[in-house]
Image 1 (cartoon, rainbow, N blue to C red):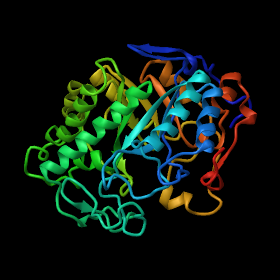
Image 2: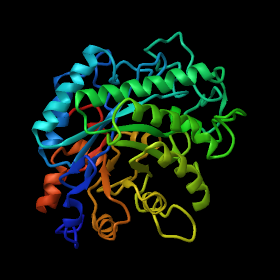
Image 3: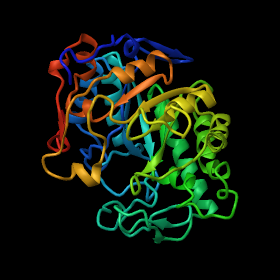
Image 4: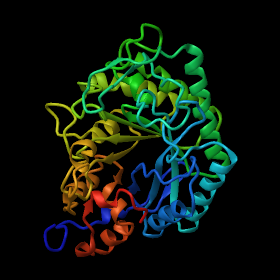
Length: 383
C-alpha cells in the first residue's frame, strides 16, 4: 500500500445507512467466511469472541459464516455450525447478544451445500446421497465437469428444503437477529437451481433463467411468511462457481433483469453480489460492476464484495492451498470512489478482516501502516 494508504477520504465508507428496520452505523460488512471451528455443529466461546471483536472494531454489519439448515444433507462437515437444535441456537444467541452489546448488527447466512457433498469429506449422514435439482455433481472440484451422482430432487424433496429454510429464518427472527442472508452463490444448492449447467429439469423448476429462480422464490416467500413484512432478507448470488471461476449465470443486462425481477417480487431486500474483483465490469459495453447493475435494475440495497482491501483475489483451491500464499493490503481509493457515486451501498470485507479483526477501526482512523497481510497461515486460527 502506498504511504498514507489512500488519496481519498474514507467518509463514504463510514456513512450510516438506514432502510426500513435496518439501521447500520457505516457501510462496512464482514463477509461470510467458513471457519470450521464448531463441535458437532455447535459453536463455542472462541466463536463468540471472534464475532464480538469485529463488532467492537466498528463493523456495521456482520454476515456470519454459512450455517446449515435442518435437512439431512444440508452439510457434510460437523465443524460447520448448524442453525437448528437447542444447543446450536443457544450458541448463536450468545453470538448475537455479544455483537449487539458491542453496537453491531448481524445476519446469519443460511446454507444448504447441495451437490457439493464429496464422499471424502462427508461426516454428517455419510450414508445419504447429496441433493440437487438434477442430481448432477462435480467428481473433481477443480474441473467444471458434471456427472450423475444422485437422483434429481423430487417435489417433496424441494418442499422439505423450502420448509427448512423457512424454519431457520423463523429461528433467526425469534432470537432477535437483524435479518438473514440466503446463500445462493458459488455453486451451492440454491445456485445449482439457478445455473443451467446443474439444473437440467424440464418441470416448473427448470427452463430459462426466470424459471430457474422458482426454488429460490419459494424459499424467500416462506422466509417472509415465517418472519415479518419488514424483516430484512438478503440473497447472496454470484456469476462464478467454486468449480468454475469463469462461469456465467447471466450474459446480458436483459437476462440479468429476468433473473432479478422474480427475486425482488418474492421479497429480497438486499442483494450480496459476489465477484472475485468487486470493480470488474459485469457486462461488455458498460463499466458498471455486478453490484452496480443489480442496484440499477432493482433499486434494492446492494453489497459489493471481492478482494476489498487486498492486492490478490480469492483463489482457494489453486493458490491459497500453496504454502506461503500472501495477499498484501491495498488502496481503497477505487472502492471509495464507487461508494461516493452510489454505485452500490455496502462493501463486504473478507480475508482482510479475517486476519485483522480491527480492520474497520484502522481504516476509519487512517492507520494504514498497521493493516495486516493475509496468508494461508491464518485459515486455521480464530483471531
